[in-house]
Amino acid sequence: MLTTLAGPELNAYRVAALKAGQADPLAEIVATAVAEARGHIADCAVNRLAAGMTLPSRVVHHVIAIVRYRLMSRLDMEVGEARTQEYRDARRFLERVSECKVSIEQPEGATEEDGSNEAIEVVSASGREATREKLRGL
Image 1: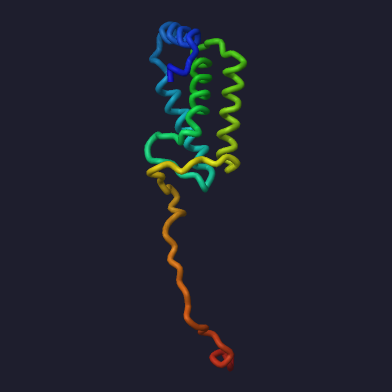
Image 2: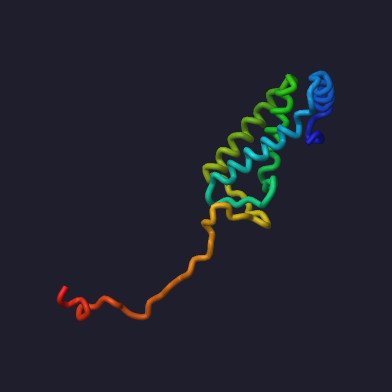
């Protein structure tokens, strides 16, 4: 995650993290953003998720933008317009994913959390049971 910050952002992050006198919030922000993205993906019934806190590759860039914005905001760092727009775009992308307007690739090891993709047994009948002769008198 830190490799996605520009040089001045990384320096400001390190200074702000030390000044804050609190534990580094990065791990919490990442976990929250990943869980949020997984929730958006799961909102669309055609999407499947791999087990664990993983993300499809198409979503990773957007989650990084969200994490970066939230990290900088939480540490009271100045967030530029480009980073703010990137955050807005990422949020909109995830909204579109949850509305099934964006296709997400099916990962290896995808799970079926709702059980809706269970095998369906097809049954066929060889003849009609209800005929005019059999129903005569009803």
